[in-house]
Image 1 (cartoon, rainbow, N blue to C red):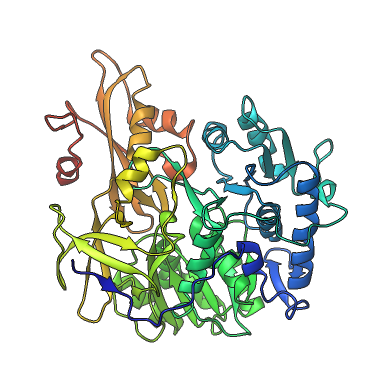
Image 2: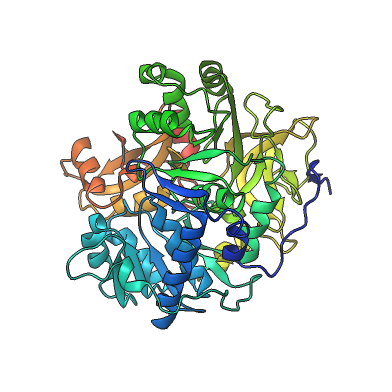
Length: 516
């Protein structure tokens, strides 16, 4: 067996410590330091204030009977209170499921039902969706973080006394967070991540994500997504960094925040790097404090990375990960960049590159990337079959991504076996859109693939076979989908064809569609 091990120093993996205790390990000594600043308003919480808020809300949740075995749905943009509710639920011994606030009511309902959430926390902007989604689920109470007449808010949850000690939990096995991922195929599934998964991965990244005491990081990437949740929110707080949040990406506002708050770490996805490389607005701002632009969630091309680095005069690097990996398995060490590489294997992680027959491959040979380490998820919630298809009996997680290592241990992700479309870093499962399209009475058959796009990375394209005698336009197909899914899942291109190519077993031949 040919195993690629990390060349970085081993780290001591925390055991038996909750993610909240780990994240706030420096809170006492940094009590007066800004922990999270709301970018648009400048509203600031220090480390001391943030931890106090966590403990007060945890006390309120515990008083309501929330604790081990209970799940809280958190559907909000990036605001300082996100960390408060996330860690209050964890401190009370419960589980958080992080929900995309741009979801439709149907998409939110699927996650609430599957996760068994009993409390839903949101903001006033998303209250109508929250109420509609919660019908016929286990949700007993909906809270709005900002005050709304007739709706319990953050202030109604401040417990007396506060909860100052972690409610005892099995840190190795108990799910502390259930982000939803499509894995390598199919509809989104709850990814079971334990306290130990999360604390391990933050510690595993210490040699690739090394921060100075005066670092300020911009947090545009959503906290409901594992990248924002772990690399930004938890990872930055655990390292004593100041975070500046933005509820949604706006280039002009982001540039203004970088200039005003002297941001040193700019976390991004490839479409944001594209804007930094090419948009004329960038020249109007002083971005000289940025030391690192770190890109993730989708592959960043060597050319785009170099163009952005040359324009900004800083390191532009990338990493690789999956929700199922808590999320990081590879990242670039600043100063050791290789164009097009996702960096090196993080500490305490093993990898294999495997051909379709299960044979290990050597240097510069492309095959499926398999990963093993303490960051590998416990499995998918309520879905043993999907778990068994992803993690084998020896603990190797089969990523569905095609990659190779060079002779210096740098990884290059070149393709994927899995069918997921990555639109601006978000996962779009073709099977979900195909299932939706087939409910339209004028559609006889449908297939969806990802088409390369400079700005988005990939965009969903639908191939449609119309029902006999049916009259259907591309615009009608797009509107039908748009009415039922979030913006990032919407079909951008429609092509009508006589027949969807399929194998003898009925599997859609996506390669043939891509070759058209």
